Image 1 (cartoon, rainbow, N blue to C red):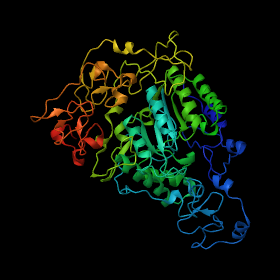
Image 2: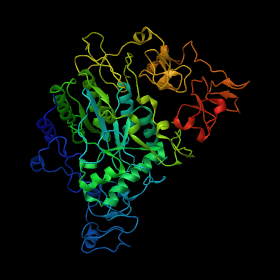
Image 3: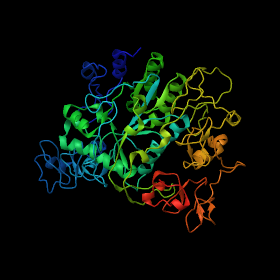
Image 4: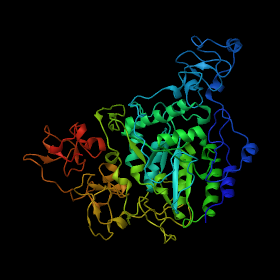
Length: 583
């Protein structure tokens, strides 16, 4: 059975807004599922005063300014906004209608973009323009229009997170990884004063690359989270294109999935998204975590989630769920609760594309040839190099997004899992293990997780079927000797580094190399005499080492280091084919 629209409306009746911008902030369900219009009148709206409002009392000078409109060329600290006028060039008009340049004036989406050219929402990111990219429509998923509210595969829960990346997103990725769960991130390019997501001096480019590398889906939430119904067609088009430019400058491609801010997308917005080739994604389950960002209040969101689980069945139902990774309680409290409950009820944690049955190659479009930042080291996140390249989406999209059924059971790390470990309880005997969602054994009590001992994994009967051809491993598929990296992670992916190779992180020695083990990864014979397999990560003519068979990666990049990254393996970016694998 499908959940009734009355039930969904009841869930939404517990929420107010998931944002606040000039009076329109109730999430709207347009089509798909009915939404009771009277909820708006009954609940009203929830206003959140901006920092500017708290920091800017109206002194005598401001009262004088408010008596008349200021000239556009000299209004640097006066009133601004509808009926008053604009700020001087380069200045911002705060949500409360004052000109200034500080973050509390300029941060999107509160800054009034029509009255302050300096607003974050008016700043175009660096990178090649994507406007002229062909927008071929492929697959069977609706483009534009009234949008999509439901998954089509029963047993799926598509977890989605809006408004990031943000300060907590890396920790959220750690948590998702420990559970073997996948999600979709609807990214906003320049909001909340965080800066542009493609700025190499920030943590955000590395977060985007990590999201993609770990199999999550990247989608758009517009450039600066403006209300589409309050923008011109040109402004809204810029909101979409500018986010494409930023994402493409980091990854070499940009998404075909998006979610409108405030879930508001009227006819013109729908037509623009159809023209640009976007699938418009809404949701049918909202725990209102954005309204309950406190240790006690978050229980309200847990109650909403529990109600959905109690009245549903994975054999018949699915959910397209919404959260926000800009809120502490959502990331550090609610997410653990949801994931534990989700698996214990027999659901799978998947991306939106998966729950809709859309192949991964349809999730993105190849970007124009241009500046693509290479992955940076953890020790020096501000150090980047750029190169000119034309990237094929089929090269960029990680093969790890297609995972075969496997019997390996991952165990969460204690860093991100707060639940106690127990050894004796009743385990569900019919938990499905399906494509890309690696299911944990869960107790009948949703708040407890069983952590299997490593010996359980190590002594599992093996029947080798051959080396990995798609970057996945386990259940007979080995990483040894492949270009994806010699180590098989706890979650069934080939790679290098501690996440893949450290026994403490669940490295599977039966299906590849693990650090400290007696066995070494197989060595591919060097292509020329005198070249040895790299044991320190260096490669090329200077070190006379090849990456073929190295635990540091199969590709010898232009920087003379072994790598498994897409950019490191691209011949057009200087990958050295005489010293390893190249694309």
